[in-house]
Length: 182
Image 1 (tube, rainbow, N blue to C red):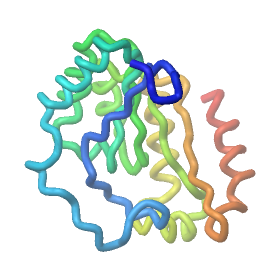
Image 2 (cartoon, rainbow, N blue to C red):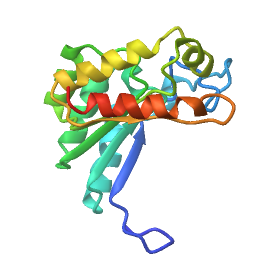
Image 3 (cartoon, one colour):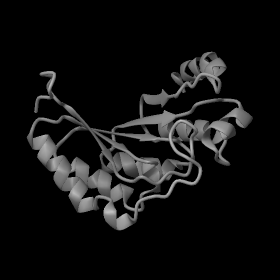
Image 4 (cartoon, one colour):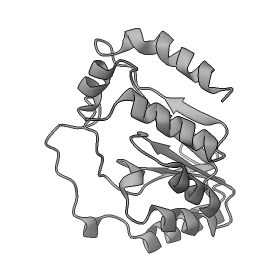
């Protein structure tokens, strides 16, 4: 596949849900209404879409959301994507909570890469940005659990918003460096 700028398309992001347990200030309003589950792609539809895309040359699939770990059939989705023959399956998560056992099962099913989003290390600012009860420590625990489950590297993603968290950039960079060697 080639896009309108003559670039070969090799990566495909698949949003498996619009649901998220965070209401990040840069992403959604606090009172957002999610689509009815019946209007989202089914696991079989996700698989068919991925299979066609892989057949057209896509080599990397990224599972996104909302928050993909909230999808009740995440493990089945990962397995179905792996059965398309693509070797590079990644997922982006807000890292609110993932135990080693869940991460190991996702890895065994075919997930190869993980990106975890964390926008601040300051608990109060983190809660202001995410409008959640989660903490930076929860996200860091997920990153450590991912490393323990065999994901290496675990990428860290941050959305920097002027007036919200730009002063966190050095601390987030230090966190990323500190996690390289665990």
